[in-house]
Length: 194
Image (cartoon, rainbow, N blue to C red):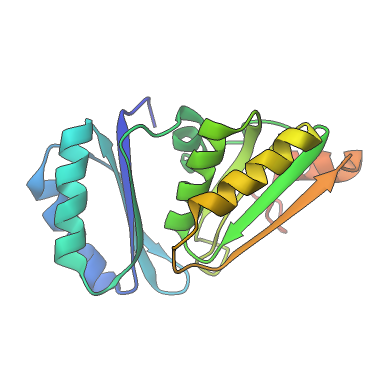
């Protein structure tokens, strides 16, 4: 994914409703359909990007078309570039002094939290994963100095206030080098990158 002024992600509890909504979204405005498809456990994600006004129109069309099967959603008119890259799947940083792991019950919630952290704390995004292989959850890892990681934790918590999602986090100080190296390769037990 290249630099995009805006992104939106909608998570549906129904594959049929999500497919219908995705079609409405791309017909509503000129946006890039970045990703679309199923995740565990039988959910459907639609990720779009493009110019702010077009993404907003498309996002609203998707919400209208998919209600009441919308589980969670996010519209980011100024998405942080590392979050956009992270959604694309690559590793962005290696663990350093401290590592923050964030886990949410929806993919949209982790994007919301990760974007807020990337914009508000002096930490680096290590990894961002959505849905697949996670039972529909989302998770992100950030690294930096302990004090900055603690600030990032508070920012993530604040970003999810009022959202109907489960949230869990941990901070590891002075992460073991063997663990840091293994996580830099892959966070999947089978070692695969996808």
